[in-house]
Structures are given as structure tokens and as C-alpha cells.
Amino acid sequence: MSIQSIIKGTGSYLPSKILTNADLEKMVDTSDEWIVQRTGIKQRHIVSEGETTSTLAIEAAKQALDASGLEASEIDGVIVATTTPDLTFPSVAVHVQAALGLPSKMAFDVQAVCTGFVYALSTAHSFLQTGMAKNILVIGAESMSTLLNWDDRTTCVLFGDGAGAVVLGESHDTSRGILSTHLYADGTHKDILCTTGGVSKTQTAGTIQMQGRDMFKQAVTLMHNVVEEALSTNGLTDADLDWLVPHQANIRIISATADKLGLSMDKVVVTVADHGNTSAASIPLALDQAVRDGRIQDNQLILLEALGGGLTWGAALLRF
Ligand code: UT7
Image (cartoon, rainbow, N blue to C red):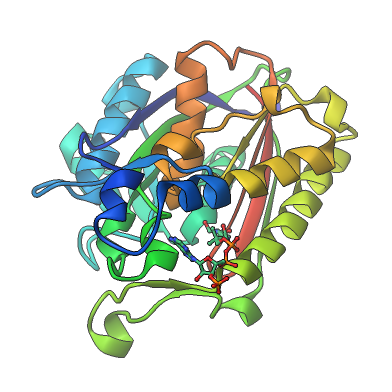
């Protein structure tokens, strides 16, 4: 009997502290007008003293577990997509495992920057397909604010913190579940979005630097290619899609992708105005929001897509 991977529950968490564009105007030479016009971002949530990527991930995971109706004892693994772990090691995943009292099964982090959640979901899907696990908590969690150079206006206005989670579990109902996932990376572009340091090179975490225009160009082309590939692989077209849940880096990239697909923005889940770019957390945060407010319903066709540092990019097509 074939095994399907279905999303059994979703959850998310945002730190309570909000940084508005007006706040940023007092910190760097920028304006609300520039940020809104160029990115669509109006505010972002950021961690306060005592909050870390793990604390965000744990809250999102609790919600997803609750929504799934499963017991902690039924979770076979935790995969956290993050670029901003509390510590270099151990992983954020083991923090979540310990906090939720999950069984001593696999727990590890995946690092593919903004594409991390799509990579993590695809990894979990593979474990379910091979029968190695029945239910996996898949989390995207980031504290991007801790990696920012607050004097660099070209990056510090873009990012935010948060976490989103899903329980991906096996099902034998062949009408639902993940249809396909598509993962890519091109290391020849590794320098266009990167940090200025890292453990083995500088013994620091460094801060984010980005060649924004180059990223923008890559994003529009590669996102379009990967979403078309996801649809055509399954013999589907844009018209079949109920929802596009894209990585939330910039409203102009999201609109361009929707435009190229011929998809109305009414079918796109957009959170970038309120969350900024939360890297690996952005897709599960947007997904959870649209599930909780009733937009996303069972059996709908959902396309997730992302692009980030690496370059990495990817998509997942699923029947919710
Ligand atoms: O999540 C990973 C994926 N991330 C992305 O895909 C991000 C992709 N890139 C982008 O979203 C956009 O390129 C940005 C939002 C980062 C920048 O927008 P842009 O329209 O590409 O602006 P730009 O970099 O071409 O800069 C235009 C001008 C420059 O001034 P000059 O050289 O024209 O005088 C910048 O110095 O805007 C200036 N600028 C700012 N002005 C006010 C750059 N940042 C700011 C700022 N406030 N915060």
C-alpha cells in the first residue's frame, strides 16, 4: 500500500516585540516609503532578551502538535530548518525534542537559509516514504535579527524573527499529501548572500551581507522555473492551484512570480508586510496563518516555493 505524507497540523510563533519602519528611520538613513515601495515590509517581529531560535521553535511546535491531535509519544523525529541556531551545537532540534518530551528518535537541523523549510519538508517526506518514520515535526525557525549589521540599511530593514511548524505524517489516503518536491543549489553564487563570518573562519557568527539586485534577478527567474517544474511534473497547470505560499522576501518578487504563473494575488498567501523576511520560518508561518484563518482547506492544491543564500531554491507541491 502506498504511503502518502500529509500535513496533520500546523503552528507558528512570533516574538512579541515589533520593530516598525518608523523605528528603523531613527536607526539608519531610510524611510518607510522606501521600505514599503521596494519590499512591501511595514514591520517585523524581533526577539528580546531571553528569546532564542529554540524558544520560538518550541512554541510553534507545541501548536502544530496540538493541531495534529497526536501525542508527543507518536512523534518519530524533529527536523528544524534554521540558519540562526542558539548554539553552534547542539541543534535547535534537540532543544525542541527535550522541551516537548518527545521520544529519543532522530532530531537534527537543516541549513539551506531561506529555502530551509522546503529542504526540511522534503527530507521528512523521504523518511516517511521509506518507512523510517511515521510522524515528523518539521520546523522553520529563525532569529535573523541577531545576524544583522544594524548600521547597514541595505539589509537591516529586510529581516525578522519567528517560527512555523508542521507535523508531517504518513497516511494511506492516496487523494492527499505531498505530490513532489524539487530542491536545487548553485554554489557558484554563494557570495551574493552570505555572512561576513562563521565558526571555522572567524570564530564569530558574522553579519548578513547581500547583493540585493543580483538576488532579485535570480529569484524571479529561478522561482518561476521551479514552480513550473513542480506543476508539469504532476501533469497540472497554474489553473489547478488553490494557493501559492511563497517565501516572503519581497512583495515585488512574490507578485512577479504570481504574474508569470498568471495567478491572481487573491490566491497568494502574503505575510511579508507584517513579518519581513523570516528566512526558513517564512513559509510555515504563512501556511499556518492561512490554515488558521480558514483560507487553506483540506484537499486544496498548495504550492510552496523559496529561494535563498547558497544559492538554494526549491518547491513542494501538495494536496493539503
Ligand atoms: O530571502 C533571500 C532572498 N532575498 C531576496 O531575494 C532579496 C532580493 N532583493 C531585494 O529584495 C531587493 O534587491 C532589495 C529590497 C534588497 C533592494 O531593492 P532594490 O530595488 O534592488 O534597490 P537597490 O539595491 O538597487 O538600491 C537602490 C537605491 C540605492 O541607492 P542609489 O545607489 O540608487 O543611490 C541604495 O543605496 O536604494 C538605496 N537603498 C536604500 N535607501 C533607503 C538601499 N537600501 C536602502 C534603504 N533605505 N533601506
